[in-house]
Image (cartoon, rainbow, N blue to C red; front, side):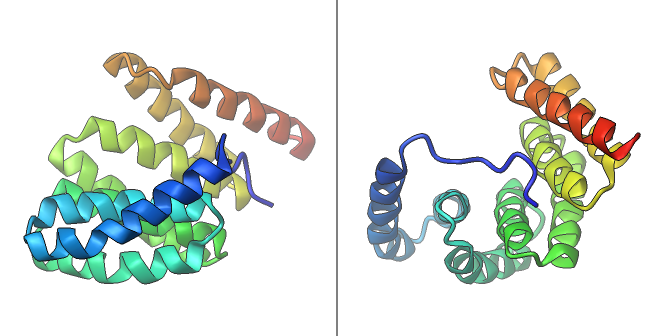
Length: 175
């Protein structure tokens, strides 16, 4: 069961964006702008996962994560880990996904990157809900919502929807 998995509003537009981004990767690599390349790969990994192409996402993200780790602790590594964890989640590589979410959250918190923290918490909360760890999922969603409120982030409603869906799941499970 996948808890509240995101679906593309326009799958055809997503497919076009994936193709365009993949076509642009060689030029980005040769330009040598590592932060731009890592950001693009993290976004592309997320898009591939949304398009249900998780294996391709993992194949793209693993070497990028290794390269980012070699370069030191940076926010780009956090976004790459988030994308990798999400792809692994939907491939049912649960242990790897939990470890990657844990690492991404710790990194984001240590860097004070609140905008990454709330996204990691929202994604990890979904995995925790899928695993039946409903209180931990609730904790993630509530922390994410509090951050989004504090940052005046426009996606507060999406976290509220996650909390509502979790309440339904909790009632069903008798929590």
